[in-house]
Length: 220
Image (cartoon, rainbow, N blue to C red; front, side, top):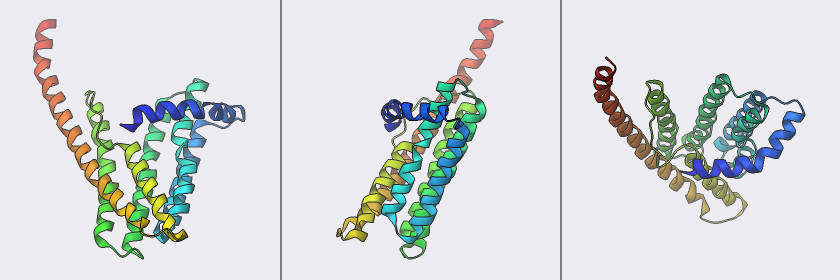
């Protein structure tokens, strides 16, 4: 739901920065790789140690590369299938690092097996939600559904909650409860989104299969 509006807003905001990078000879692929490396480092260095505030700051600095690289490619007129593939693949790596970092915290010093399992479910369900759309499109279906919790929502909900929970280390009492709540929200929302996409693919595939024979007869 956030993708439609947030992407349009941040694309306008980041266009001058993207143009600046192009003038300096930076390629969109380099931005994609550096952004992913920054997100992975921020998540796996800080989150397993419970340093959620600083981890979120580092991740936020790099996560916008997902918008900058595409903006650069469009401005330079070099959009390609390879760039789209690389961007989508590394998005999955970054997402896995974020929720993997949460899982490592709860498996270690966070000492909560239930929340560790919830974080792992968020990681896995996020990957499957993305796969269902990609697989549906690969067999010629539009997968025309806006899921309840897509990638943008997963990241915003979890990172905002993590950043605020990190303020507990600065003396803000009780605020650390926000992260567990956010993980449960993302887990439930991802499960609903997965269901939405599966139902949509099922309906679209049935419609396509039913229309196939009639389309063949019409052209014969």
